[in-house]
Length: 160
Image (cartoon, rainbow, N blue to C red; front, top):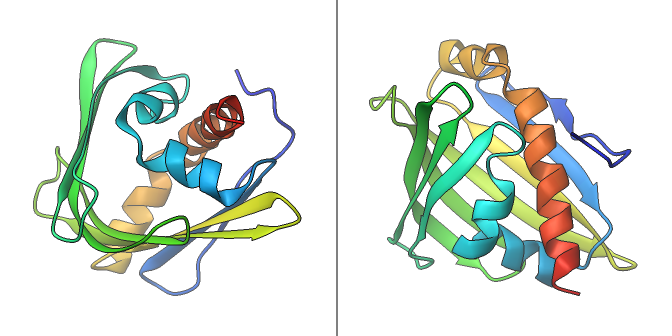
């Protein structure tokens, strides 16, 4: 259940892109640490939708990541990708593949900016086509993503 008042804002900058933006009541170093630390990822990535059973992070350019969740209803949800660019506490660029659709790879640009101790996280997802972008939007991702980002804020604040 979401306790925060903030929701992510989802916009469509182009026919193939989804931009997700959310503000956090935490400095960017803490949001970044929660975003990239396996033990913390397990606390937020699944939102309220299940249990994250795996969060593998090889946080270096060319390194791979993989997150697995057993969703309520007992089915597995898994994503993986590789890191293309890392600027600690500022920017992480990675690929992302939903393992049930292994031939579709998105590029994700995560940007962390801070003003007066508050962090804005911008997640720009570049899909290979408008069809895959629309499929992402129609998947119901927005509600689950808002749950995850609420838990991300809680994880970041727990580090203060």
